[in-house]
Length: 227
Ligand code: DX5
Ligand code: ZN
Image (tube, rainbow, N blue to C red):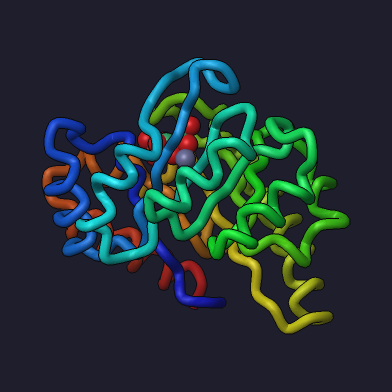
């Protein structure tokens, strides 16, 4: 397995002092900063955009993982590139031309990823894997932090890992598998055992008084489950 990565979602951070929160969570062991963009159109909530991404960029000494829950997708991609995004993922249902959007993100120098809602089949991957750097499986319906993990997504993670491993055998290229929603210390081990290597955690990290302690516990659960 590749080095596991913890990606705290700043959706659950204290928005009144976001720079400080980013600094603190990176010092606590975060490997990525997960940045949830919601438009009150594709999902029923409204969050943060490129201006906030630009504002936290000086504090982000690890890559910023931008999760776009917006429609349309293409128009906003260059704004996030300019704002300092490193990885940009989007929902295929929100783009009219999935292959074009993946190409657009990569042409701008970012890593590109597709996000799968709980009921969305993995078929979207079939003809575009050469342009995909990360697959993100939603283990809740997108829109809010603090929801419960949907257990059926463990089977989907195993299926996705098998597809990505087959691709790696053919090409030598590793595509990351990320999960988002309801990830806790209690379930992160079984999620890792299903083949996930990148773990978004919002409320579990920012809802804990000691970020370093919860990230340490998560990493030790992952290590135990994948040993
Ligand atoms: C949900 C967002 C998630 C959310 C996860 O639509 O994409 O990134 O912040 O929050 P938790 O970890 O609390 O489920
Ligand atoms: Zn997210």
